[in-house]
Image 1 (cartoon, rainbow, N blue to C red):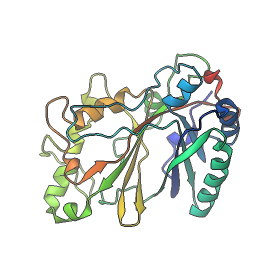
Image 2: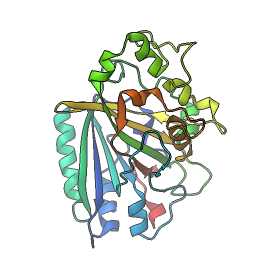
Image 3: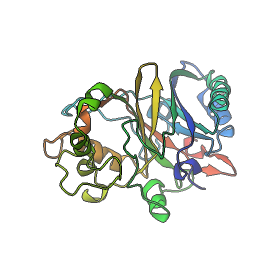
Image 4: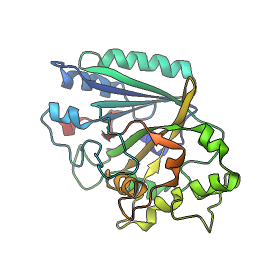
Amino acid sequence: MTTQTAIFEPIPPHARHLFFDLVPGGDVRAVLAALAAASDGQSVVLGIGAPTAKALNVAVPGLRAFPHLPHAQPPIPATQHALWLWLRGDEPGNVLLQGHALERLAAPAFLLRQSIVSFRHQDYRDLTGYEDGTENPEGEAAVDAVSAMGQGIGIDGSSYAAIQQWLHDFDTFDRMPPRTQNDCFGRDRVSNEELEDAPVSAHVKRTAQEDFEPEAFVVRRSMPWVAGEDAGLVFLAFGKSFDAYEAQLRRMTGHDDGVSDALFRFTRPLTGGYYWCPPVAHGRVDLSALG
């Protein structure tokens, strides 16, 4: 069994995130089998939310709902869904039509609640102009960071995805002097070099993966989104569990030392969900861990 391969590949030119809730009385197992057959782990990544596992009366190791952090500053929304599909491609029309086909497959048991269109911007940059995912582990380090191992057939090779849709306040950001913008990220926007004198609230200081105990390495595959006048980033991080991401989120929101991430000065999350991404066997997503 292998990890869904899209997790290790660069972000595509175009993508679509589909989020579904359960339909009462639907045949969840039959629909998941059909979706698994249509999901290759490369053009379509399939993620299972905790409500689906609960409906099947199955305990997937490590799978849980997105956390409620009552002391987070600012508040972090939890909008957990039952199913997530990440569609990837080179042409937006094909991605749209593929999504329609998958929505029809899912319809007997899952209701589409949200669809987010995303895209690659310049050389993998956020719409603020800063590069995203600079510190991603690569090669064997990436495999170690995102692939669950040593837990048995059906779990080994699986990964755990954390997803948030962030809304940017561009008016506020654009009013900041360039140095203040750099201080929010802890990097120079043009060179992408880390600032030696970045403040403790800088994003790079809040999320330095090697500074946690244990180390909190994840592989980020975030992409910008636009809908009318609103825009921001679909944050997407994969890990071998949710623990590394959750440790970073807690530090960003001041749980460790009372210091909130400077990114909150101009952006905030609208959603938050956790999804278990099963491994791939014989060219299709393997759902054997669901029974």
